[in-house]
Image (cartoon, rainbow over all chains, first blue to last red):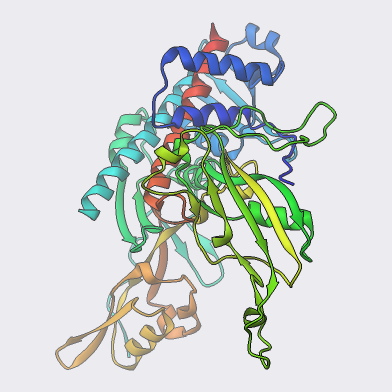
Length: 144
Length: 362
């Protein structure tokens, strides 16, 4: 009866709650987050592979993202590959049964790879909000 | 008659070239972008300004939608498609509390079947369950008693049908539908049970199944099914029953170039090798000339290359930056709403990941 896999859907849960139309008060969201953290003991969503070497050379980054797949991996890679600061970038799904991806970024000398990666996420967010805006406009004009 | 009037024009770089056996001019080896100026810095704002979205066709019930997005590349289009299939949330029956099942269909098969039924409920009004696997105690045993349900997270449907003999049936009748009452159980047998304040908040539109006539099981006299079904909010990544779309797909816009004037018998032959509506025939003086009427209708069968004379003058391609999306909703939300939701999901994913990365920097 309604069996669920062991696989955690915690990340998606939290994110999709943000999608919810009714914006919850700020205090309430923090409460929910705390509550969810209790459900998943010591489960990280993101981790730097070999953090000591990253500290020595912040232009060389391999980031593990849990509960992510090609959806995020390929779209971020796509935007990163056009950015000037980036020397090399790529992502990898190490095993189909492990719900994680490895993201590799090599930036030019003296540039922090994490900052560049954050910028790429901002870009993708912007692209999708643009698509949403243009879609809504186009839909409104076509149905009126 | 095929008359050669012009040389093969230079093929544009933003198109895939389809030959008889190969597909050429596909993506660049290192990026998916079409040709771009390497000396110019990449600007997201410029990229966003270039994106264009056009509606093409929407069905009357608003459940099927076709639209175009141009000036994007496959990774972006594919992210939208993947999010539509696996990450836009819907409601589905998750816990079935089975009180009686004497039908021939086994408990677990029946429960799985019920789980797959599409519900007509707006998932945006609900919250995700608090636990990943709820209703199971420390020993891994399902709960002993049916829980009350949370009005902000659950919907409860009850079903209670038993099959009986129809005493008024004609003696010669052989059809089970005439011989018995409730010989077939359909989705209309479900009754929604409001919990908490749900009765007042769903006054206008009662939650229910998308379709009333989905066959669930068949019964014979003496058999019955009694169950209470609890729906929760979930995403397709966890279980396909939560997927809000029947199909969500994209394809590239086909292009057809006629590098010569094709007339007479050849024009009609050209029209017949393509799908209906692709090639039109126009009158030019006394001659009938083939023209490309609507390349969008082409299935890209490349059937034209079987005709040697036509193959020499017809060039088939696909526009690399023109994505034709087709979205079919299962019924909970309109297709147009699903696309908007998918974009929002992608935005919030990026936002939360960016925040986590920024937390790693500091």
